[in-house]
Structure formats: C-alpha cells, structure tokens
Image (cartoon, rainbow, N blue to C red):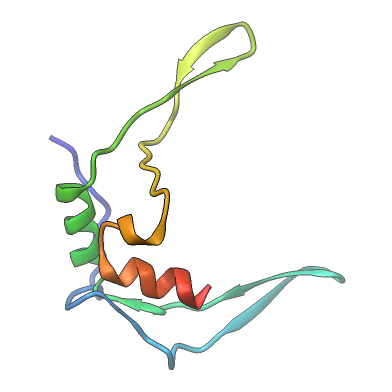
Length: 95
C-alpha cells in the first residue's frame, strides 16, 4: 500500500487563490525565491485525482558505474490539452 503525505488544511475543490501573500526569501544579494503559501486550495483532492488518474512511471538512469531506479515517479504531459486536471492549466498559465 502506498501512502501519500496529506495536509490538515488542504480540503475542498482544487483552485488557485489569487489573494495568497507572497514572501520573498533572499538567497544571496542577487538571488531570491518567492514563496506563496496556500496559493492552491484543495491540494489533497488534486493529489487523490492525480494518483488515481495518471499513469506514473519509474525510470532508470546511469549513475556512476551502474543503472539505478529513479527515486521518484514521473509523468510527462506534452501539451496543456493533455493535463490531467483543469487546475494544472490554471497553474501553468499563472506561472
């Protein structure tokens, strides 16, 4: 059985929250990352949908002198029309 990390506050319908505050974290004097906590609501429902509907693959890669399994599952979407949930199109557009 595979377990997935859940959130206490990620219930509801997946949707973007435009009013989520942005926090800028400086990494150096010329590099930063913007953190926007709570930008997507309903992420537990989105996770459930992606786990159930997406065909996940575990790849292999050459590392040092041998082939090893990738430490994560992946799925490639070649274009926006093929995204497995509508909120992912909203996220792609916003980014």
